[in-house]
Image 1 (spheres, rainbow, N blue to C red):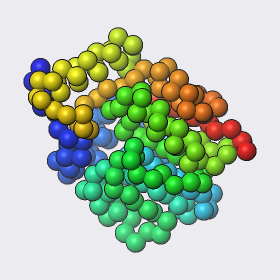
Image 2: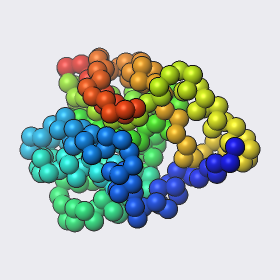
Image 3: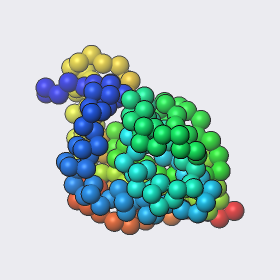
Image 4: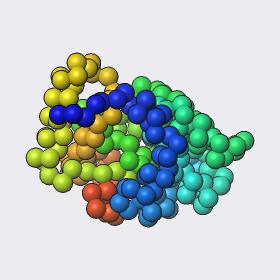
Length: 221
């Protein structure tokens, strides 16, 4: 295998100049799913939304146009991506950006909703379960999580992605740090993990090829 693994943050930093264009141009359905995702989030004044892996903010461009008085906390491990996002909304109140991995940083509490777009398809079920438990606790009773991501078409493909990554790590002598390589789960496995984390229901709301939009709800208080 010849794919050279890059550390996650470095991968995105190198591609910052054309990242927005690449996502809109080359990812099937992106012309529609960013706006659709934004439309599912709360829009009342003062609502609080957490964005996991916000990047340069493609979904937030859509969202803040319809919810200008929302408070958004965005987490991303790329400083360059966060700077690009901040430059889109200079001086905007209610936009808090945190540089770090959402597996490690404090998520906070009291969110009406959370969202993640094309970010979580790099991680194992075990890491996601831990994150989703913390995310559930960060949401208000009755809050919800919108996950827009791409998923493996079969369990066989899911296993193959992780095996390919294992071989690449071994060949390149890499540690267990975060390297950029797509390892999507099946949509069914993703939903199982969300339910195991304590979300009361998980529903698929839309599909664009391999990309799906899932809504995971917490129980009312």
